[in-house]
Length: 219
Ligand code: 5GP
Ligand code: ZN
Image (tube, rainbow, N blue to C red):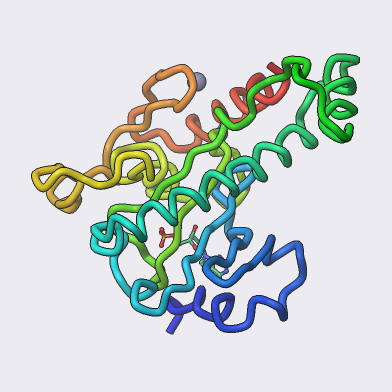
């Protein structure tokens, strides 16, 4: 069924264009989300057959597996940050010097400072995933996308419904383990950047997200 859609990437990652499957190795497949909820939205799919059908909370109970996934998300975060830098990075002399320094061999001890784009990326899972195959979201913080069309799209990445990978292992009594009781997806909207409240006014939120996006990317 539709909820099994991510399985195809696990089965035959090599058959997809690089614009779809970002990379794959023995243990992971990294893809672009087909319905991105931010200007950059990737998914990391672990290939471990014993884990791919599990709920993330259960899969991440395995400490060794969790560490492996965390390590891979650090790689993907760095890759995503590079993409943001290329898309939005200032075309300043400083940034150009940084690019030259990064490609130098051997690299210099001190790189010129640039914006830390890794800080602009969030990594985590949904408390109640909709797709069956285990996946970790790696997305830019902007929540700016045409595909962000429903209230639950915004809140699923902007409330405790989104569980950062850094928060695992979860405590036994963590409230996010029982998300249905919490109504995270029905909460009033809060801007991810300035914290302003928008009640349940989705159109207003969307308009505001566009303004915030413009500010954020050129900061
Ligand atoms: P979940 O809500 O399960 O944590 O997120 C599943 C994600 O998979 C969603 O962000 C959705 O846009 C994405 N998605 C659903 N079907 C497909 C697909 O066939 N291909 C890709 N690349 N992404 C998909
Ligand atoms: Zn705001």
